[in-house]
Image (cartoon, rainbow, N blue to C red; front, side):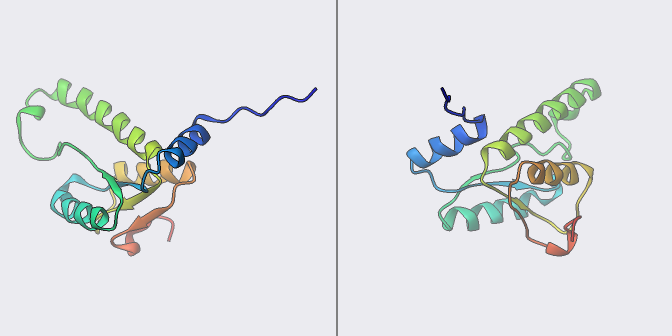
Length: 129
């Protein structure tokens, strides 16, 4: 007797997106120093009919979120986890900016390890180019 092969969580998610007729989901990655460029990319991708997710906080700008260094580091860890979840949810990744730091480099590697296509607003910064 043969048993049906169980779907992976990723396959279940892809099937659910198809059943719901969802447009492609793009996650924007990059240094938060490029928040203005991320907003512009969000507009372009949205106009192209895609659902866009991107960083929701800029931890580089001085604000209350960074006033306590211990809390700020804990928040950064939570935000990094949240952004990896956005990468898992997305169909593709768009890296914004002409600079790739360690966090963005790790996000690109993570996305590629999941088989997600990665595009760049500045292809010359692709660490694998």
